[in-house]
Image (tube, rainbow over all chains, first blue to last red; front, side, top):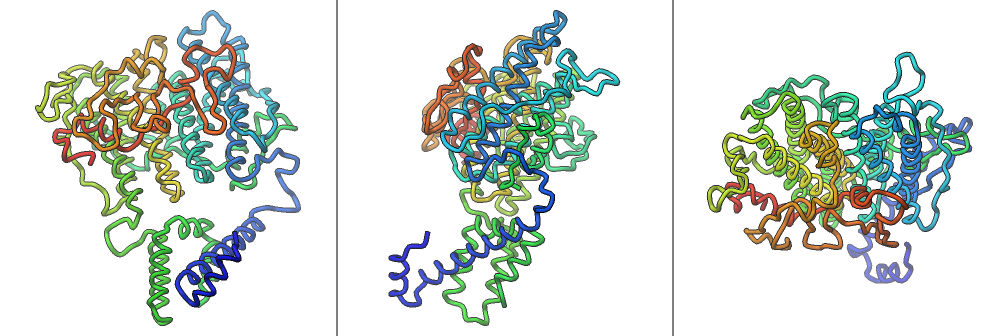
Length: 261
Length: 319
């Protein structure tokens, strides 16, 4: 970054504005680096690193692409198991649900394959090992008294998590192309999430657990309901997302995103 | 005064302080401008200006935001009003069944919240509420041409038409937010807010689409996501007020002016380097899956050209 030729030109220019601007920005850049180190020192407990042995997604835009790739691998693996499982194969499962899960299986496999092809260097493993032992692929919804999630409940968790993850990662993307790319995918994930939620409970497509609004907004036909909240998705930063995602990943495949707190 | 110590101290309670300075370039311009002319005695004033702008607490009524960001958010705000009065009219028209009423009530609620959120960011730079009278959902542009949707007048008389046009509005909104996101990349908090509205709009689209097919358990069209056949079968709208930079024919699923950046929704070519064909990446997927798996952005000019078709006075809205 530091260019000696430019610096000597600046010096030759005496105390002109270019020097002031350049040195101010440089100084503030140094302050940023120091501040960042200070924060890093505080946010991590070096004696008991909770992410030791985890696969870190890395830094910069490649780190965010890896993060997305990991989540897409997880979703793709989940839906591959759904369509091979007893709930999907059950004769009583509706045509609409079978069509929906077939599409979701296709979409997520495509997303994962896309990132595999798009991340040409610094890509994390293509073989993340899921741990779906907490999911019962024979049950449509979580059975009463069961410790295992039903397929719809798990699908909702994955889709909502995916939307929150893409939204929360946007601020870390520096390339306009990658930002737009994330946008192209996240709205499809949001469509998925809303459809899955609809299968579970009617008109819960933007409920308070995923969108910031009051649980009961008695908005009548005149539009004069009691409005509180922002109507925005509850986005989540990568470490928060991975805390949930890691519950569905095997011991050797758990993830960290130490650069994206 | 040790400015950098102060900033470091602020970072302890607000880790984003550097973002606030760095992303609002105008702040630096102002601050450095002060530095050029001001004496040391005036420095405290310059510093206070730096902070007040970084934290958005200007003494004026404006947002202090870059004009590109203001324009992007104001277009989003106008689209929210387009949707708000559309849903409000539908609910007042008694054409919806209980399931539809429940869903549209929730969606209207969100749009009102989005309007509040956007106005909160834009402050005095926000466009005025255009009011219901500013929109002509028949598409006759206030009687200047024959209606496109005769059932969507002052009172709506067709739930099917309402849902069909509603789907197109909300999908246009999703594409507009997606296309506008790049303009916000320097303002991380505003970017995240906009992208958090974007996904909620996509959830709305998914719900309106399942209402259109008669409920989530119906396997008929449309799907909850945009299928490639929607691009050619959705009739195009004219760019009849000649929005510069938009194609002559526009539509919620059609390409923008720059087809490479804003392609048809049926597009399967994704990524830049390398460019990948989403339809052939995975063997054995359904015929439309590659296009369905990615939504496409739309540029501001094309969004405006679409929306003007539903303005009573197209010269007054979506400028």
